[in-house]
Amino acid sequence: MAYKVGYFIGSLSSTSVNRELSKALIRLAPDDLEFTEIPIRDLPLYSPDFDANYPPEALALKEAIHRSQAVLFVTPEYNRSIPGALKNAIDWASRPWGQNSFDHIPAAVIGASIGQIGTALAQQSLRAVLTFCNARQMTAPEAYIEYTRQLFPGDGEVTDEPMKTFLATFMAEFRDHIVRVLTVLPRQSH
Ligand code: FNR
Image: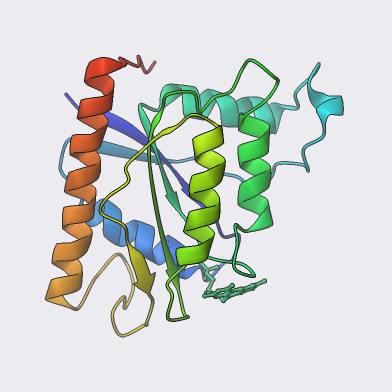
């Protein structure tokens, strides 16, 4: 049986290094994980005024999460925190009140930065938000990736063997986390 993983790229950049990282993660993931990107680019800015009548982009977002058995966040760090576009998507998905799409969903967080702390602070912010949203987060291993073009030359390739092993282990642990959570809290995808 394959597990459906919806993944968020926290960057809207056409040259996103986090998108590169996501390609590597998908390549190195266990075979029984099936990945679909959950796009955030076209969402308007969230307002409670929409709660009675969500726009199609926001309905599509909630539906995509609902179809997923787990979610993976691959995000940059903006000004030591979560990029606004990603936070906006999470706010949409968490509402209307009582219809939080992240409730009990298995989740993992990872990110790449050109800076040395490799998105550590963005991930801490994101983890706090996901805790409030009641997602079941994988707490270890953590992964703070310092991106270089040499390490990730493109198309999901990773040139360094220890990094490759580290990312493969991260994804294998995420897979085990998903199975553990779904054993206790089954989640039907459709
Ligand atoms: C950054 N960057 C950055 N890097 C970091 O390590 N910590 C930070 O707080 C920030 N802050 C920040 C703010 C803004 C507005 C931008 C545009 C960039 C640099 C960031 O790591 C770099 O641009 C990455 O390439 C962003 O990831 P994507 O968009 O390429 O996936």
